[in-house]
Length: 213
Image 1 (cartoon, rainbow, N blue to C red):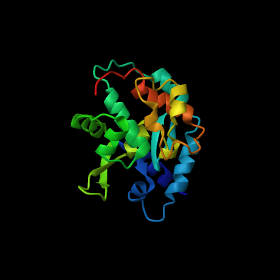
Image 2: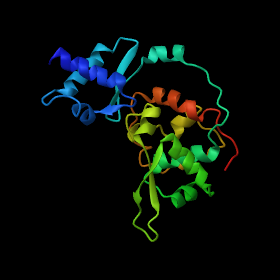
Image 3: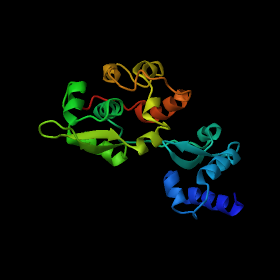
Image 4: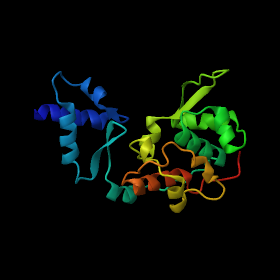
């Protein structure tokens, strides 16, 4: 492995505006470069520094070290918060995907406005993903890599269960916990990083619940 190749990949990651997968990094390097080995070497190099190289959902990026992130956190007052409908809709899509609008409404037990989905689209956390093969062929919705990256989740298998969310205080009685109950992911073994998942999800959910539909 040439130091020049390692430095070049390091520079690519620093200059990138979003996390990069291995294929994208390879496309910018010369043929024969062992990109994955270099990434792991860089990850080791940065493991005890102020910034770390992390791999989430198959994509690599530099981030502030966990033990320093709170010290650098800037408190910002957000005037507009996610509504109860948006939070529940996001949770249903995350735990039941791919799912149609009518299925979301059936699980919630109430209809919601088109604006609810548009908010999630604007955040980049949800996207359409084909159509369901039933009469009318309604659109199917799924979460995105940006959703995983924002909440520091490596894969959907790492989503916390309803009991874990309740225990962590991230949902309360105004959010119906039953929306997590039929999750195909909810009963799978969770990773050892759930404590980190809670702290990141809390940024969105904690204190954002209201009575909007």
